[in-house]
Length: 447
Image 1 (tube, rainbow, N blue to C red):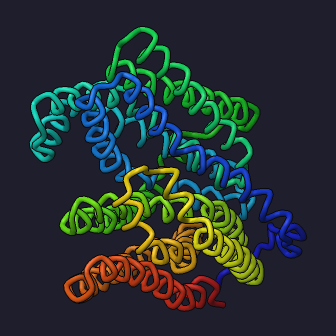
Image 2 (tube, rainbow, N blue to C red):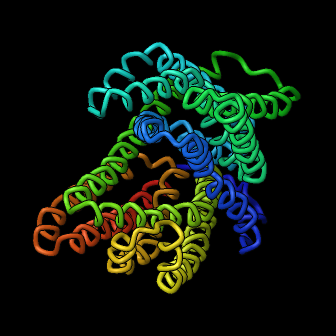
C-alpha cells in the first residue's frame, strides 16, 4: 500500500490560472526565442552573399537537429524526476538527480567531441552535396561539436529549473544564450570576416556562456545544502531507473524526428513549389509547439509534484486545468492562423507560385494547433509522471498509423493527403496517450 504524503498542500490544491500562467508565460517566451539561434546564424551567412555557405550552414543545422534530439532525455527526464522529488519534499534527491544528468551530459558531450570527425564524414556521405557545400558543412560541424558538452549540460540545467517550475530563471538563461550568440556571431562572422567558422564559434561560445551561468546558479543553490555522498548520487537503482527512462524518451524523440523527416521528404516528391510551400507552412506547427510548450511545461511541473506527493486529486486537477487552458490557446492560435495566415506567408516568401501553393494548403497548417495540442499536453503529463514506457509505445503506434495513412491518402489526394496523414499522427498520439493515462493513473495511485 502506497502512503499519501500531501507535500503539495494548499498551493496545488487551490490551483488557479495565475499559477499556471506564471510557469507557462516565461516558458513560452523562452521557446519563442529558441529559433533565434538558427535565424541569426542564417542571417549572418546571408549577409556574406555566398550560396555555398548558406547550403553548408543549412546542412550542418540538420545534422545538429538529428544529433541533439537524441539527447532530449537530459531535459525531459531530469524535469520529471526533479518535479517528483520536489513533491516529496526531498531536496537531496533533486540535487542528486541533476548531478547524475550533468555527469551523463558531460560524458556524452565529450564522446561527441571525440567522434566529431566520424560524424562529419557520415553526414557528408549522407547529404551527398556539392564539394564546396560539403567543405563548408564540415567546418561548421567540427567546430560546433567542440561545444557539445556545454550544450548537453545546458539540457540538464534547464531540466532541473523546469522541474522546479522556475521558468523565469530558464528564460533568463535562454536570453543570455541568444544574446551572446547574436553578438559573437555577428562579430566573428561579419566584422572579423571568419565566415561559417566564425558563426560556428559564436554559437559554441554562447552555449559555453549559458552553461557557466547555469552551473553558477546551481552551485550557489547547492552550496548551502547538506553534503551528499557519491553513493547516494550514483545509487545503482536510481541510475537504472534513469537509464530506462532516458532510453524510452530517446526512442520517442527519434521517432518524432523521423515523422517530421518523412513529411519533409514526401513534400520534396511533390515538386519544388509544393515543397517550398510546405516548408513555409510547417512554421505554423512549430509556432503552435512553442506557444503550447508553456502549458506543457506547467503540466510537467505540476503533475510531477502531484506524483511525488502521492496526491491524486492534485494530479487530476493539474491535468484538467493545464489542458483546458492549452485547448483555449490552441483554438485562438488556429483562428489567428486561419485569418492572418496569408499575410504571414507573404512576409516569409516573395515567390508568387509558393504563395499560391501555401494559400491552398493553409487550412491544414492552421489546424495543427488544435489537432496537436492534446499530444503536446499528454506528452508533458507522461514526462512529469515519468511514465516513459507508455509514452514510447503510443509514439510507435501513432507512427505506424501515420505511415499507413500516408501510403493511402497521399496516393489518393496528393499534398492534401500528406497533411491529413500528419494530422492523423498528431490525433492518434494525443488520444492514445489520453487512453493509456487512465490505466497509468489507476496503477500509480492504487491503494
